[in-house]
Image (cartoon, rainbow, N blue to C red; front, side, top):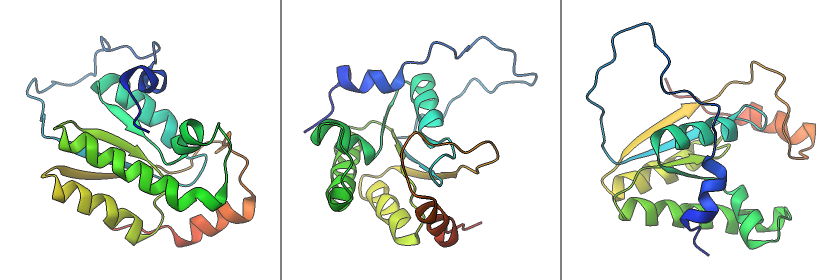
Length: 163
């Protein structure tokens, strides 16, 4: 299933963002409109979804998460046995979006190098810029998903950072 614009907009609505705020510095009016795959990475509760929604709204592009697979393909029910399929579904939507010459935001944990490489390779294949953004948990870190603490600790322990 492909997410159409009507379905995707529910993830991008955010009327709290003001684009008229004075940033306090000179703004370069030239914006780099290069087709880009933005990968937001972090453990559950780090704010990936929140930031993805806001960025998508401000930038006028779509965002996708492997978790959307469960929303749209599995009646909103998470099933760990379908995780591989969920990630493939997400990757296929990213490919389709880049093939259509549009930028996209991906919001997934992507704790291992091989998970990052998948999206970097997709961006390269579709002549797109690749940007990986890591979100730290410097707030309450509460996630709406019911993920056991030992799983989150495991994710933290294997999280790859390349500076």
